[in-house]
Length: 278
Length: 57
Image (tube, rainbow over all chains, first blue to last red):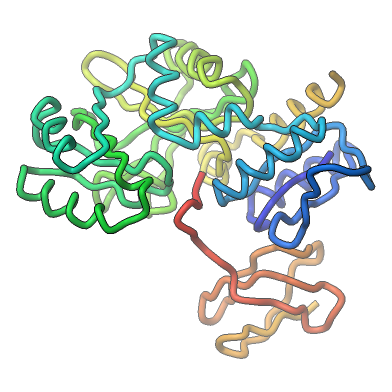
């Protein structure tokens, strides 16, 4: 198999170790110093390629090329495209009937203020592309919103896609559900001690979460809605039940392994082997 | 194999199975270092990029 990466973190090292134990030969493809010819003969052929670039754009574009060359890439281009963009994810979730926070989108600051009148204050402004909680801003009132939007007007056009979401009443934690193919491998609670962001990369704490039938069914439904693969589904607990707010296509899982003792790399390699045989 | 931190000169041992591209953390100053060449002693490293605007899960 091939493994495209831009850094070898704990996760990639764990995947490599498991592959070695299973007798799987892995060719590492460093996206930073590789070239990706769009046509020509292959020097090497991989049965399956695992995409692990932390950079979303590097991830998406290298997947597009590798797929066009006939490779099976996990996750595939369509899944990465949908999950890497919060708006596309929300649309896929809504189409599949997955409960998700009420969201409005606008393309100018004036329209975004109108959208906020619909959603109500406080609301959350999120960039459609981005992770680890970056540029996610709570908008407490109209004055705050105007100030934030003014800044956004000077930023890259992607930040002028105003994705505005209702604030969901929930405990100070969310759920990260790790889905591999049609299986829910594990789930953790992620607690926030600093602010509303529960991302482990932002200092959140992980704790094991028992995978209930509700979590399992919703996790699989979400995976199918976005196209399947290896995914981290983020859910929030509300009085009405679970809401899905994000789906991650290149998941970190050190905290999940540590909290649950579930062998996530084993799930990943097992899934890749199945895909490689097809 | 040894690694020499490019920030604080601290010398520390790399894991036995270290590979190119691996990110190591200097035990002294905490700087994240990316291994760029495993055929040198000490290992050739550069300051690792720890985050980009589009980085994340």
